[in-house]
Amino acid sequence: MSHPAPGQISALGTRASEASMQASADNDEKKAVFARALRMLAAREHSAHELSRKLISKGHAENAVQQVLSDLQEQGLQSDQRFVEVYVRSRVSKGYGPIHIRQDLYQRGLDDELIDAELTCLAERWIELAKSARAKRFSEEQPSDRSAWNTQARFLERRGFPADLIYRVLGQL
Image (tube, rainbow, N blue to C red; front, side, top):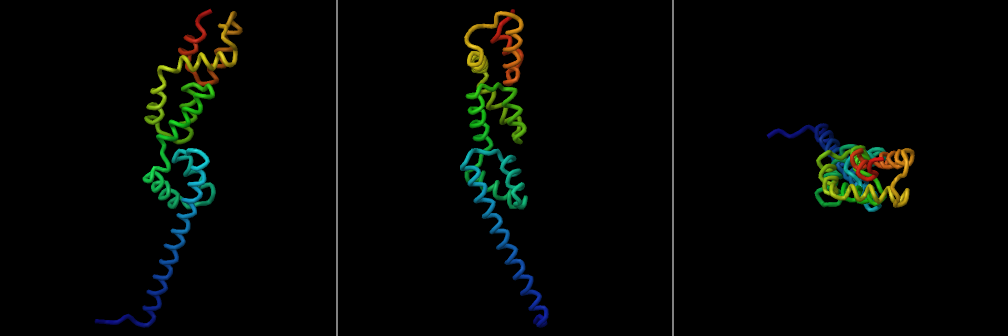
């Protein structure tokens, strides 16, 4: 059995020490990312994409961010499904339609399947939500002339309601 030379022992010890320090630094980084992510999630729900983007912009390492996101999802602390549900409920209560909400969610990095599932659940209510948004802004009266009809139609369109719903809400002139 051969024994390592004294210089080799020193080199092995140095490499082991460096590896230990690197592991400790990685662990500290992961703890910092986890703590910041929890603070962000305590304030409001975030999509995984949104949370990742924010954490990386704060200077955290991408691999640590991805590990922490995985841990948060496994623990049920971050959920894209829950984010979509909360976000849709919030935007609907403010009078926004499916087109507007879909675009917002898409910009937050959510996939179409999650978005479609949640928006489809409200399919029966979109007409009532459009009527409510119009009434809140313009009162209960239907538009009396083409100018008023166009104004209300543009309002509903900006709110994200599709043309077929707008025609159903405003009727024909």
